[in-house]
Length: 524
Ligand SMILES: Nc1nc2c(c(=O)[nH]1)N[C@H]1C(S)=C(S)[C@@H](COP(=O)(O)O)O[C@H]1N2
Ligand SMILES: [Mo]
Image (tube, rainbow, N blue to C red; front, side, top):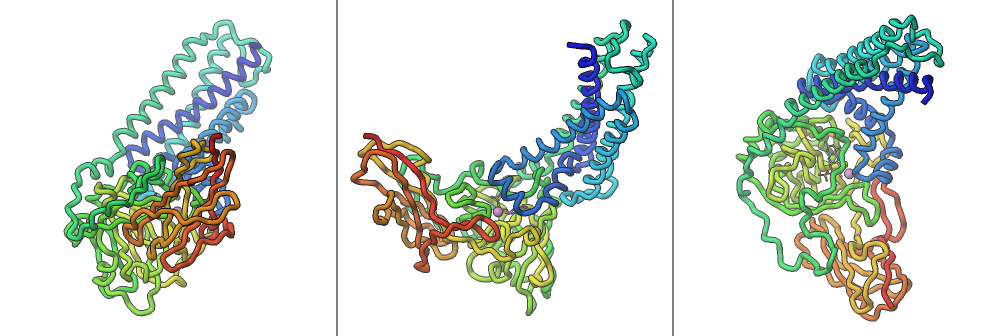
């Protein structure tokens, strides 16, 4: 390697190291103050500024990996700018300091304006300030040390020509040891800080026992699970349940400090602690949840058993006033969701839920409490980490997704999915057994039909319907399967006798439509 290249690499490396020190130190401080790391805050700011189409694109391209991809993007952008700053430090030190300071300022601004935490302004500002001071300080220190070492041999590196040889007396090994040692200590400090600071909600969750509900769900009927190898489980396990939200870092909300306020157009404002919720009449019910971002045939649908307090009862107790038509719910991370009041006061069984499949809500699914409303897409109903319910009117507020191109109101669109075959699966000729799920929350599924290639539609065998708010499995065997490549299509008819439309709609503004189809093969 030429000396020029070595010098440049070293400079870029020092720039990276300076930024990494800032990130590590600030993450450590953030963990101790219980605020998001500035990297997360920058990501949060980005999410807030993201238009609907870009969010659609991200979910489509990266699915539920959209969060790691975003964090990776933020880290990559910082790394590139930091390396550039390092390179420039050789010839234009002021610009280098300027770039690093600008990065620090962005971190500070994002941290101070981060709405996903309840921390006060000082707690919020501290990690950003540390990022700014440490990264600029580290840059100056690293390069002055570099320069001092080169000065010893009469070179002034900051003014040196790129082709200059490194001075003979320059002790690379010692220099690198100092530099890497500092970096390692900072990164380790950050990691330890994260470890010590985080996890209040996790400890809180472990200490909770969900009482036996006063109104348990009826036993799961026999026959809800269709007998098809590879089909979904009837009850989605918590660890398999899709997760969709804007929270880059799962909100850390311990149950003992959580409370929910029910206010607005009500006669009696309510304020419930977690203990108050546990003391109330708890109801258990199985409800299928669906996301507006689910493409036809997609994975963002899950079925779980929930335990919670009926929202109908809470709102009756609060005494809803005339003229209200909406509930604006807010989460600990400042998500706002608007739900038609009716969906929470009618008999469909909407819950302020505290348990999912018999356990306290998993942290990613809203611990300690969330809303579950049958028949509405999650973004207009299923507020996780919920802390506030305001009875109000749609005309008086705008929920988070509304200005981002999604409809203010969004009943689920009933739909059906093929689980088996998977795309391009091959069957033996005498065992073409297919199946999947269909859902039409609030009215249930009446029939499901499948079609192979251009043949007539055939009615499938339906598994037992649990209740109208849960999905229903189906199975079908192709009796006289012909060898070769085929397409299987599915469509459902809901409890109102309406059949799924073949018109394709994309997820925005209010959910996808169309028939799911899968190509498969039958052996000769
Ligand atoms: N606080 C908060 N709650 C939220 C969201 C969110 O971004 N933040 N996303 C909603 C959306 S779009 C859906 S589909 C459901 C998904 O719930 P799950 O992640 O438990 O499956 O949560 C809803 N609740
Ligand atoms: Mo969603």
